Image 1: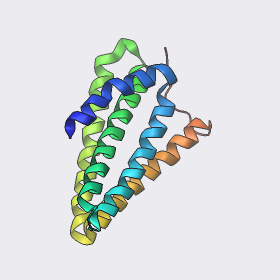
Image 2: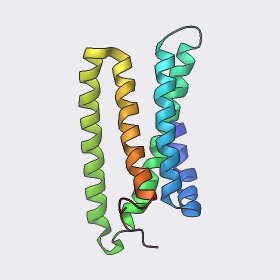
Image 3: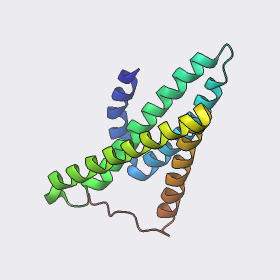
Length: 147
């Protein structure tokens, strides 16, 4: 399954080059929200339950890969002369965010089970989507993108 997400890197890079990072990030966030719904439906069981879990996981992996590429394009364009520092800061924040999400997910799993984990995924994606939409509409200043 990981090969699907890894293979999405080239496609996401081409989309970012062609359309810029904002539309790709929007698609990523919508994909993450959709994956939360599919994963929740898969957890309910039934004959399609396992297939829904696989599809939801693949959708989440591809959406996150697209979002990572789009975000890197935006962040790395801020100061091309400081690329190594930007990469270090970006990856540090990425791993800290992933660790925090894992910690929260484990806590929610213990209290609410799979429903809580899917709700956390949807809530974080909705929060990021709200921030993204505000930035795109110009109410919040996004990081500058130099080309």
